[in-house]
Length: 437
Image 1 (cartoon, rainbow, N blue to C red):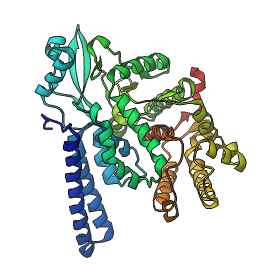
Image 2: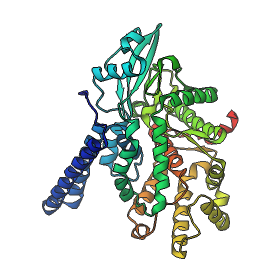
Image 3: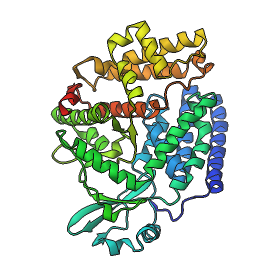
């Protein structure tokens, strides 16, 4: 993969890239309307989605940073976006053109006053992994194999402007209306800002490793503060293959269940006991080593869960609450899904909609052991998402509902469910986390 020597950093440069990408999308629609005359609607629409996904990802991968991170987040929404977008945007997890060697050296000199080959005994100038916010290089120091993550120049400074560029796309895609939508974008902005602070990431990584080290079959790297800064992070190099690659070839059900249980326990312990969770559950953040142990990486995106949100959120996972209309309605108001300003029509519609959604989405919590290989369960989630995405009645309402905390909590669970399904773990003990308090 060809490296890049320069990333657009100014607001004008980045806006120009978005505009040029938009022009390409416009051309794709012209092609689409032409193809509808000679081909079936399905073929024409598939070609449109593929061409748009290629062009949008092509533009975002040159920008890197927040714009590309949003694509990475959207790649987890397998039930919302067409498959062409999911496949292309998922490349943002661990397949992005890397920085050139001179730019890597320049970054080191800026933060350490020295080139990387002076700081480390060995340093590989060729990156082994490049994603949305930074890329990883291998190094050695005092006999230890290390992974050095370097943040792309300008990423931290362009978050606000990047989000303003992608905001219109998100508003249209998720039917967001009303002035109160700003709270959701501010939540994303705050989290992306935290992700660019590698000093904070080291602190969070050390805390999670200590708090979760007792969970069976999960490992964490050691982090080295003396070789790190706000934009450079050094940790142990961990051997293993990405979870998604492991899942593709693994045929041993016992291994699937072992990894699946470790992953589920890791998340439940964080959520229920620590009230803070690793809110970036994509395959690029997990490795499987040769001993079939889960290796957890990248704790830049951590979501604190306030009690006033935690309690009603998980009470809605209780079938006794879901099936009690008064209690169910009360929790919807506590979570800002329903508001006092709603019309009777809106109240009835969103009460019924969320009752249907939660009755399916919370099924794992209704059982002591759950089969995450069950395609029928994931098919129900997909069918609901598709049906409501096409619902004309929903589009006339203001659908930006719920507390701002839903953004990263729902992202966590959608990502976790997708990872569990990829693993095909079929015998996961759901309440196992209670043993780790």
